[in-house]
Length: 230
Image (cartoon, rainbow, N blue to C red; front, side):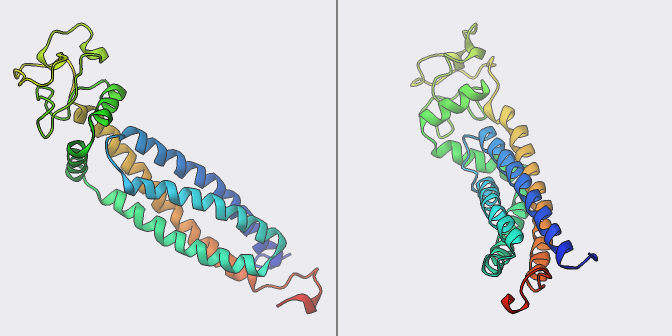
């Protein structure tokens, strides 16, 4: 068997698809962490990374089967879909890396203003924080928040931000709880960076997969009946 022959192309495609299965789990895991770290934000960009990971897992299994069987029809649709997935994953990776810190904060701020009190409360409990930027805002303010009285950071505090009555205007005093933006910003920045970097790096391996598939599909299996080749 010479490198570039039928056997070499087959083994290369099988290896690539095994790699894609591992990569898909990494993308799904990183994307899931990104969404968990930013529950208050509807991160459609990061959701795209998760979606591409799921599709990559599904089609890598199909590609593995097509490579082992040298199935012409499966290999044809596999290389077309793999190229489309490359474009999708590459685009979302670039967008993730292009979002700067100020844009991330602006996304979070808008999401906070449109979120329900239940979502805000869940976010506060998850990060043990109070309010978005200013804990001393009542619930009727655009960036207001539900009560923080049950949070661990308020357990031994009598600060105004820890009151259970969020209908009154609070006194702007130092709050024992940190704002949620301060706690979440670093996690979201890390999540965007990892999602974008991994999506961008692994998308280039899919171009290699397309090239190997085209080459492998057009090669004849030396063990097969010559008349059976398309």
